[in-house]
Image (cartoon, rainbow, N blue to C red; front, top):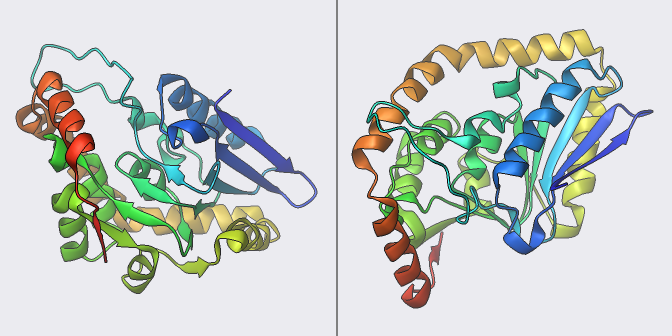
Length: 259
């Protein structure tokens, strides 16, 4: 199992941990499938009224899809099979509140998860970045999710600058992506405090409020996400060229600027 679930049934909170620390909690196909199962199970778990989502270890919350994963693609340029489309709670029709606790790096496909969380509590040591353009890939789903959570210019800069820049936790807090900053050792307790508060309220009212909040932006979100497959098909380099760029950058990449 690559997703660890711990439940406090008395308090009504479940902690979901991406448990691939040695892979910086990158998501492989098994992890993607496990996340979908967990979210759908929570829909029927009355004892779970709020969720904390985090990553194992101090180095990373999640670094997106595992580069070792091979996803066969249809020949049509109008279709893209993306295993990350099903990893988030909203994609699985879960409307119980999810608090993301971000430790270390959050990049690339991590934004599928952050984009479907209600709010983010962040360690001061965390950083946020999107490597897609550096490696010849279109940031489509990730950019759309972040454009709904950040000022447009900040989302555009992060999506376009690739590995050259990382957004610090402090800057993420200043622009509203992050709602609370903590010391690394206080991250999980802070996220749990928020989730326990939510779990202590009448769950019908909480879930209704979650739905109301998402309804305010869901039409625009769905319209934007609908464009993503074609943009990815048109703009992505071939997997071979992506791999060459990835190998070359890893060998000689300068230290990214943190702002």
